[in-house]
Image (cartoon, rainbow, N blue to C red; front, side, top):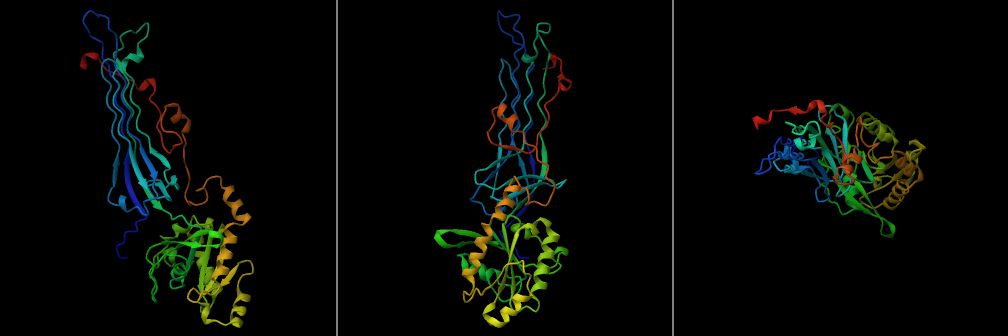
Length: 392
């Protein structure tokens, strides 16, 4: 495949900052022989955040940035001086980016909205200075708490285009021609298979100044699940669509068989995609007469809505828009969406293991409304490092 700027898959290594250690300092000043402990706390390590940015359309800017490291927290100082907090790191990603753990493949988070901020890795907490351990029976503690260690995680980021309608069909089925006819998108169109090498989006205008988004992906063939053709690498871009529009040319020998082949490839990729509403469009119908179209309709499944269209002449385009709009706004489609509870609940075909620590973040005064996808426990008293003050 030729080099392209459409990058929808990257693998990077992320590492948060470690917390600074607390100070074990004893206050020394003239005329204050019993100054006591005044060691300050260490600063926290920097966090790793993901931030949705609508100005990005691909993951190209992350292709050669394979390491993302946050800053470490500073150590505590004398006179109760608090260590500096490590610098946070924000990774801007396009809306529709899904993040997985590269080692286990588990789902981590989903960035779908512009400005949405998700904490990917939490920086280590700073250790407490010896002033916190002073008691009536231990007025000169000679130990302080070390900072929490950093976290490191290798993640895989996949971009899934956000659209209402997804086009599914064999090469040269007329998908790009349809997008070109109903929207301002201008995908490459030619008379040979696999003309479309990268997904594209088109905004389709509808009645009363309404519109919806249509996603065109490269054609798939029988055996794509086994790696034939372009394989199934682009099917992730129609996982989010509420309606799937299957497109089969009218001059095909067996329209129903081609539809079932396409349906089987989708089931192999992700069985949950079969729960989406489906519409069949028979393309290139300017070559057919009404009698032949009636014969073809009798051979199609009765429970599958179908429309005969021709993107070149405009035949059936208005009826197709009405059918798509009705399917997108049907009650069954709305119920299926709301029943998931989360927007990504039925969109990802991998295990989901997401831990939210919202209450803990709010208690610490961190950013509000941030999803935390990973965390480590605070050190126990047994983990306190005891160091002789003379070594400092």
